[in-house]
Length: 245
Image: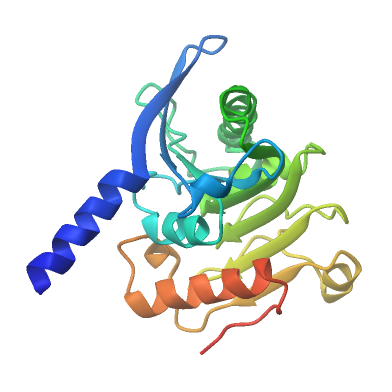
């Protein structure tokens, strides 16, 4: 039985995920991506387009190590594009000075990558809706996603961050915002909304007790991954801003 379960798991991964890269000629960047499709992708068509999520990895974590999120979103009907933002020739992420200033180059480059991928894949995937995107990112990937959401792009419908810490969440009434917080590191001042702002912009900020920033990947404990997917389910299904324990 265990061997059968393992084989089924491997088969599912082989069928559902396609690792590739996209070349951005304007910036001479070979961008690694992993695309996974909805469980019932045959229901996606040009009349009833399926939704799309762009998933940005945390710094130093492979974009292929967030399958617990990709698989959940696939079950909810999303095509997921997981993106690796840092290439070998990129400068390392700054660890000194005013981090908002010294890391902004990284976030701006990442936002340009998301914008490029949106444009490139939209033309080749007519059965998917690239005009109401879900951006989801962990740590620095959440900072990148927030940076793009703050640029006022009209194709962003929802933003979900997993314990990003530097870039302020967008205060926009036309973008649904969820930020899932760990309990070991605080966000910088101004990143998270005040209670007044959260109410005004209908933003959801949820801390998961006893959770760690670095565990919000496939490497993390099952209980934490389950809590994260519960919060996301509640949020995307419109049933509340809370953790199911």
